[in-house]
Image 1 (tube, rainbow, N blue to C red):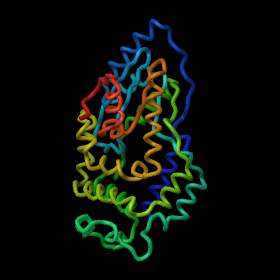
Image 2: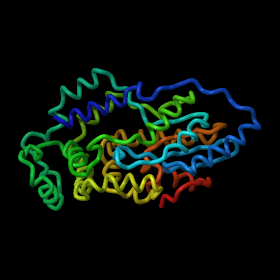
Image 3: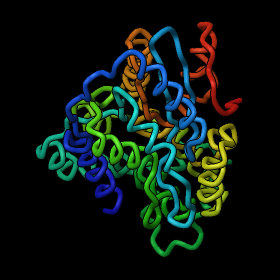
Image 4: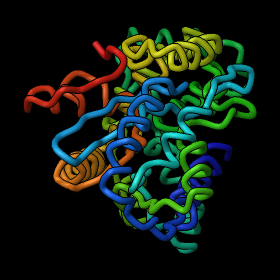
Length: 320
């Protein structure tokens, strides 16, 4: 089953090797610190990825808004991002899952439980008549009717890939890729913003009722209706710093409520890890760079809104 392979690859991507931790560079002299801080802020503003800087005393936080699955034909300029990365003292990367080989096997072993509806049930038992009709229209050309009994989460993934163009082919390097490579070259201390145990990830897939995935399916249906061009438009808006358009794009709206960010048990943990990391960065001397999903930063009540509400000056692209 294609979607099972997708989840196995997700768990593999969460493996510790995905976020190497390298030795931290020694601190610079105080006079040079001020010069390099000014330079890194300027570089951040010139980057081809949306970035925001927040400074308090001798603490500076640079937040990079990332998106996944940038279509290969949408080019962007990572030069300034690479240079800014090389001047950071600490880099925070997205969450890392502690998935083991047994976790992967468990996903494969429980594939039917994860990938299928309870026996005798179909999408019509969970979707409203309106969304069921819209799904029927999208799937009208399908030869097989097995999608009717497929998990709403897996159906959502298939809609995103096959009809909305999300990760449908080879993707261009994204901000996480660029920062990770640049940090490795400069031997910057890099660490995940937090960890999630592999068994927690697997349990969330196995035990979540279909009702948890209804909002994901609704948003995926909307993304599929927008078609594959919406994936390209989202990436173009991202490189042009049109942040509200990115956050409100059908694909980002779907990702925001689909697993794992829409999982009632995992989502609070993921949000809290970023909130704690931001809090720590604002009281830590030096420059911290954090690469986070753009919707987490720029959504209503998100990280940027929270910083403004606390009285910090946030310098960067408009996000409302």
